[in-house]
Length: 77
Picture (spheres, rainbow, N blue to C red):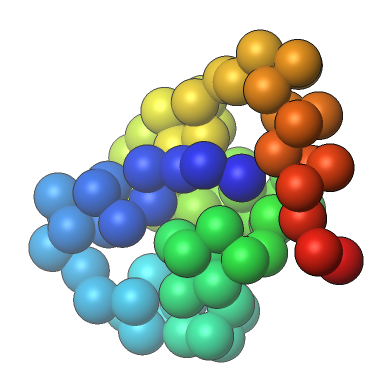
């Protein structure tokens, strides 16, 4: 899932480890979300957005359904 996590995290001035600690997940989890390898649960997305002082839609900008389906179909897993 495309996201603005790295940009928003850097604007706040946090490291991956600091954000991970704030929301109660591992640094690897945050890194995987930033790299688009892992889609967080809705609750985790809300926690991350709140920690960064953003909204979920700022963190994960809406993508038209047609493009989301094409992206999911292209995934090897």
